[in-house]
Image 1: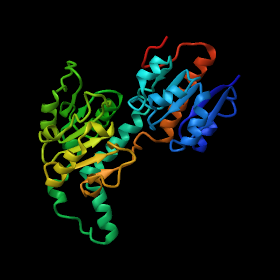
Image 2 (image 1 turned 180 degrees about the vertical axis):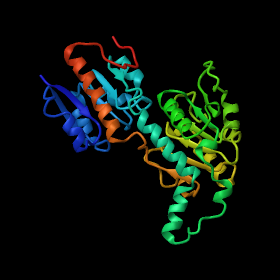
Image 3 (image 1 turned 90 degrees about the horizontal axis):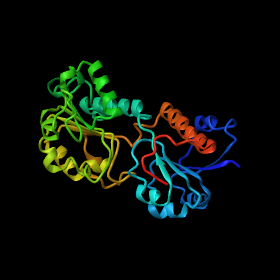
Length: 319
């Protein structure tokens, strides 16, 4: 009997080509993330759920009577009720590092766009008011290679960002990082010191109770007025109201954000009205190459279920 998979995202043709026809031992039911009717119809019979971003609650998992595995297409499992999954004997797996190349590039994209005022210059050029350029560009805009870069969190993505900014000219000793404890690396700094010393602060850590609003009003006040904040991790790590206040008051130069406290971002979010903020809709991970890596790992764990082998990258312990 084919393994029933509920793929909770909308596939492109490349994704469909990867799972058919050679994977006819799978019965994949595709469901858009906003299609609750299909989701709840398919949920009771799903043995595997391929999960992206739409929260998977304890109530959802209570309905998933046949489920053996929730496989996050990505690294962060904060959108899955892992305790309920564990209590119900459902394994939860993730894909550490699979999206790292794409998110690292997206992080650099936001860094450069924020540093170089890209949205503002694009609008000015289209309006015919941006030529010749604002003379303040030559006084305030900086190269990445001249900046001290602070990485908050030091996992797969942060380490790739580090390699890229060093390749762009940032001296290795001016790439700082912080994590839960001093790891002995010469670039490690406690968070307050990293925030105070960095020209660019980039977030690369999971959302937990400890990291919720880690960058609150007090933490943001430690940053340089000319500094740039980049967040490609999770929106609630930053107090958005405090960030908007700092950006509006000139206590922070710019921000590049791919994630938000509420997603999709709400129309009244004050960050939407600021010229010194670059915004993207949680897509730095979303490339053809990341999707290929995701599908390879997702299919591998399905094969492991089929063949009775241990699952890879399980984040909880189930009986």
